[in-house]
Image (cartoon, rainbow, N blue to C red; front, side, top):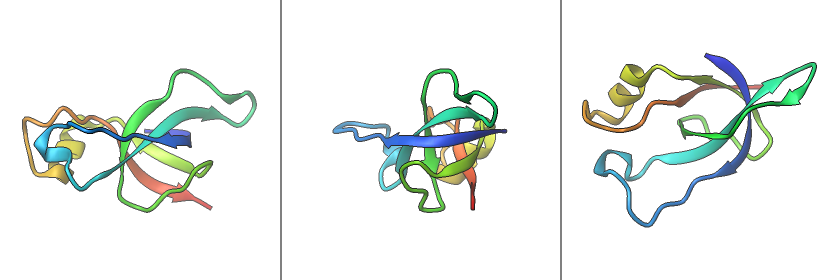
Length: 84
């Protein structure tokens, strides 16, 4: 799990069936001292995070697959909470 900032949203005309109906956001790791670091990654959003929101992202693939109810889903990341 790590602190991140939402930098955009992901849109796809074709996706794995397990991801239909799920909002997917682009999140980039955030270091309070150095700002945004690394490359953005896609995460499922269950909390309604908006652009520039600070969020906690989990990289627990098993947990993400549990959220979409599909053990063969390619998803790995999900937003665990929005930081006020």
